[in-house]
Length: 148
Length: 273
Image 1 (cartoon, rainbow over the protein chains, first blue to last red):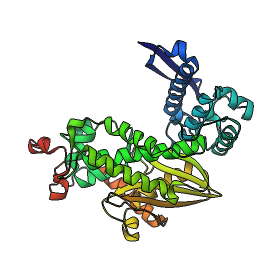
Image 2 (image 1 turned 90 degrees about the horizontal axis):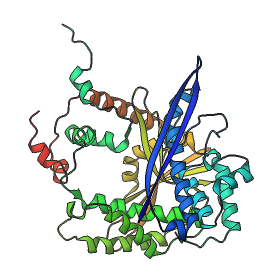
Image 3 (image 1 turned 180 degrees about the vertical axis):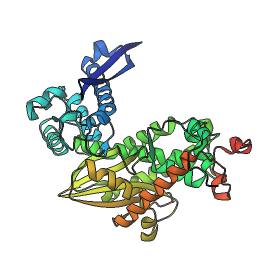
Image 4 (image 1 turned 90 degrees about the vertical axis):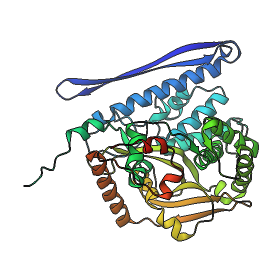
């Protein structure tokens, strides 16, 4: 049996003259209900991924309203809505890898990001920070080679 | 009388709001404007999918699995796991719509994939030195002022010291030579232009990794020179193609090469202008 989860993320960005622009994303996902009993961690991981996807989509849509210089290239779904974000944020592949490693080892990715680099999420890491974190997690956790 | 250089209202109404364009959509328009319209404006389903497209996508999925696994675990997957990724992608296509070549079927294509993936696994390319930073990464950005962002998917980006190595993976019926690699360089130059703005690296190295679809597959890596003048030319071409797209003049460009594997033959035959 499937369970339905609705994941939603909204964000507002201040604009000149006291204006603002708001963007929201909501997705409905069907998940295997047996995960609730058998593997709640996997279930949380899937929900986390849905939230990350929503957040990245929202931030991607907000990018044109945040960029004041000539439009830079950006990795899809990566954007720089605030000055907290690194100029070259972690790639999607790195974020997927971080999520997979944490998921396999029962770690909370956002907590790991906070503890290691004092940032709220993986998409706030820079490319080099994400590479270092991946290496660190791989060396300290028992990740089975090649298993997915 | 001087005609007004104005986009016809009908064309403006016809052209959908495009969030982005890609190298393949620009190439598609250059190849046949009517095919571009069927695909990107009318969003017609093709009557069939050529097996080369399905096969290439599925091999790509397996190669993606390989590098993503190295990134996540430090180790490569087994051949069986690569074939699993191949099968998953293959099955995502409607089996009934795949058009095979004279001597091909699903089984023979899977056997070929196994040989190619084995060759890939044994190659130096499969064991990159440096740090993998992107696998099948989508990037977008302004390429030409006034046209929608260009979207690109980079197969593999590896950081090696201060060098960023961008690789595009290709399957090919025969081996490539250096000239062939250089003549296909536009796509890589575009990737370099976008990736250089979002990835780290003081120097960018561009290369194709080409594995042959032959009885005994061969994998070769061809480096491509970064050529600023050629990039500028590519941008000019993109700009002109975009102007042509905006003009709303979509006509068929029949040729044996264009029409043989085209999935829009029926729609094209019914075209009345």
